[in-house]
Length: 248
Image: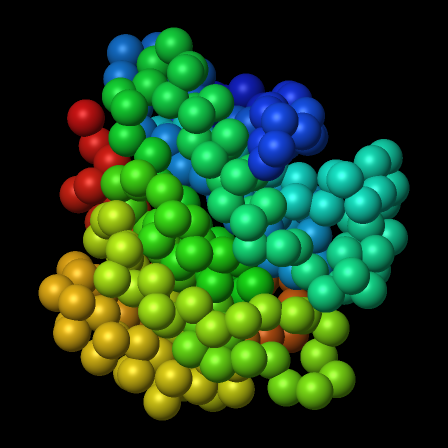
C-alpha cells in the first residue's frame, strides 16, 4: 500500500458522446504498468465516501475512476441534491450506465501507465450496475457489492426503476466477485444463491461470499450498517481478486 497518490476531477466522454464529470485517483509510485478500476457509486451519489473508495484503490496500486452518473441531471449540484433528482427519475437508465462505464474504461486504458486491464466495482445500485457493465462490455474483472434487482424488480414504492437482467448472465465477460450480507433484504441470500446457480448454468466463473451479522451497506464506514469485520474481510477478498485478474 502506497501513501502517495494524485486525485482530481476530470472530464470523460460517456454515453451518446456526453461530456461528464468523473473523479480520478492514480498512485504516485512510478509504476510502468498497472491495472485500473471503474468505481460505480451507490444511489446516494457521487459523494465524499465514494471518492474515498476511489482513493483507496489508488493507495493500493490501481488507477481508479468514478464517473458522476448524476451529472446530467444536476451539474454542479451537491451530491444530496443530485441524488434526489436522480431518485425522482427512477435512477440511471441501463443503456446510459453502460455507455458511461465504457467511457470510463476507455479513459483508464488511455492512461500512460495502464496495462490495458480494467475491472469494475459497484455498491448498492452500483452492484447491479457492475454486473450489467460486465455483461455488456469487455472487462477483466467485476465486483458486485450487495447489488439487488438482478433477478427481480424493485418493490412498489421504491424510487429505483430497474428491470431484471439475469438473462444477461450468458454474456458475462469476466470473473465476478460477489460480496453480500446475510441480513440484507435487497438482495436476500436466496436471491444471490439463485444468481450463483444461473451463472453456474452458463459456466461463468464467479465467487460469492455472504457475511453473517451483516446487512446492506456493510462497507459504509459512515453508516450504522457498517460491519468492520465483514468489510475488512471483503476488502481483502477484493485485493486478492483484482490481484489475480488485473495485475500486469
